[in-house]
Image (cartoon, rainbow, N blue to C red; front, side, top):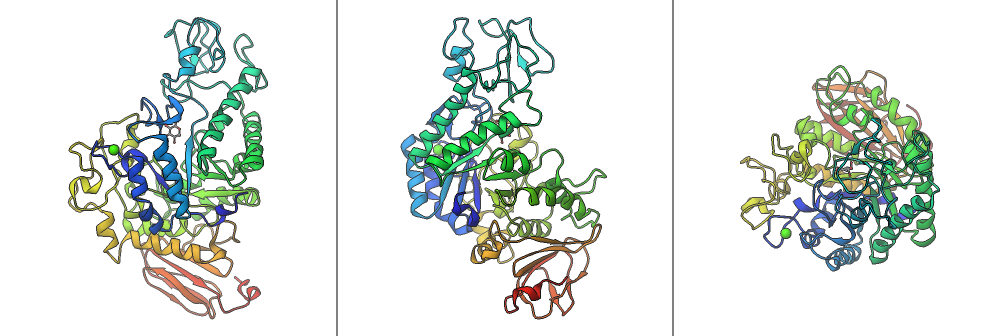
Length: 522
Ligand code: GLC
Ligand code: CA
């Protein structure tokens, strides 16, 4: 386990929208290098970079055409290596995005695979035996190449699925078992790509659709086996490298597949959305909405068992958002967002901050889809740096996506100068996290809550974090004798046996000067 993860806070950079240094309207790697100090200033000591590889950009670069070359619009491989080096000089880490489940349909492997003539790449993708063979349970493209067969796609039509074989074989005419040499060759090809970038200085990977490798693998046992093999390679040759899964099932991703971290995101209506997004089935918004209707139990029921099962093997990653979901501003007002962030950055695990969330960037409604973004496009608009041209994103005349046109658009500049800003909360809380071991990734954690009630909170070592998401004053009973207030949002008052909290408030208290066992009574 790479030790650095325990005190890491990640910043996700969507490269095309971060900072454009050559005026072509698209963010680039040099732009990221220029802004490393900004990222570090937030308290983020690691970066997850969305795909920067050569691609026709039918899915924002998740349709890779060449895994070993940086897309010219972002720069060169040398620029990327310079980014690794500059980051390392500042004590920061860089995770690349690994897309193992599919490639672009313009990838040279696929161009070979779809030929009638057989080659080393014939089985790199999953083709049926003939074009008349199209079982409806599989998503496939039919009759569009000279090879007589249809091929499975993993996501969009332009993303043919790589062939890792089938766990349960239902169509032996065209489905290969996972241990077929051609399927093992796919695994080797992915390992080769990983080694290529790790040897150049990358610190690991965020793994796209990590659970999607082997088909007909409902329990994901065969997919997990592949990842465990890859983890063995890391443990042996790159013990400091980290892998985070886009899986959202910590038991499978961390315990079974050997990932160091797993995303906690808006998948399958899980506890994440009940906290930070659309809420519950009755249409209530997530619990930080001041309507007071959500129930913290909806979250704890999902999260606590997953946390207990995986905590000794890896980290669950709480995230403000990512490039696939509407930003939190779409659901919550600023006061609620401050509380949500206070939670995200004080929970165990390894937190992730999506670019622009630190200044409360808006989810831009009704944008025409760009590069396969569709409804996600509104969360991918250019970073807002200052009041200059294109809000400081680009000196060019036509940024590839429009910048926020609102005259009150938040920018780094105006947020940094505002003592009441979301930026201030983010940087303050991340700083408190770094300064205290108890608040690091694997520090102790114990929820304090009663189903259906607010405020709620949790204990982490000598700290207690309390949240009042309600739109009205409220109080919670805890043994607060002699505690010290460390940080608050809103107004809170600590008495001996309770804490009074104003509407939408948060407080961290510490039992600093008590001995550990004296904090145990709730
Ligand atoms: C992941 C990515 C998403 C992409 C998809 C297909 O979910 O986060 O952006 O479109 O995989 O690669
Ligand atoms: Ca550029």
